[in-house]
Length: 439
Image (cartoon, rainbow, N blue to C red):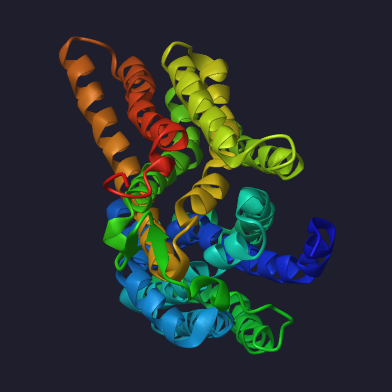
């Protein structure tokens, strides 16, 4: 079969899988609106409100390996269907949570959605990677990235409009309201999740049913043969050093991506920009990523190999990080946004480079890569701790608090450099380590 005919035959499956990436991009990015919403209706501290993000990340860690076991039993197509249906159940939990205005019930719904999303991602990422030639896997995942980030932008805007409308007025009224009046105000605000989450649950459930009938080719047969390196037959994922290096690389990458997207607004404010000015800064990072995804679709693999895209991305990450450290003001903010350019093709390139040659171990390897998403829960808080430590040190030295915050925030971006150095190592050498010994 020719490459052209293969591409044509895979067009419908690619569109279907892109719709799945759109869905979990939409669901993931609404957390930005949920955090202040939950904080208000449940009267939470900042630390408590960020459990919204933790509930999502924990599900990836807890459920990734069980998801691979499920996929080994039922296959990719049924796995995607199951993931969507579980996500719909999680969305339904928001309705009784809103009625009771009970935070742990909301967190349970988010966790259940996260379980569904873990199953969906553990199936969809390797599926799109091995759907066509492995050397063009990054191109297909870049297309998925465009769908994912576009959905994220839409989800963030839509749910911010629905959930956060009038939130400032509610906060002001709650301060002076009596117990009964406050309860009425917060209950009314909580009820705003009813319609959007009911619609979400219905849509997810219907898609879960439809995906089982979708014209998706079975790729499981590509994974059944034993894998040999030299004269050694591989019997365990522990025999693939490049897989574990890929997991480490994805771990630090997700941390770097979250830092680029989630700290830029706070960084801008620390440099003296108003909240109204800074609220658009994350959009700059997002636009940089989408533009680079599009460039990747055009360049890979015809003009650029996946490992070259990953190498260039890592080098750009190091350069932009150094520029952040050595500039100030809006210029420094723009270099944080430019990390979107460095980050865009990292995820698309890591997956095919890591999964290449894994055969029947592909589903387990995919689960390990999904677990690496936990880097987004660990590295950004580490950045925050470094900021606090730097700020305390500067204030102790007599620097004014405002200046100390700006300087501390800038200095702390050094944490990105070792992250991109690990990505560079994997791009140049790490992905080649197919075995612990030479044969």
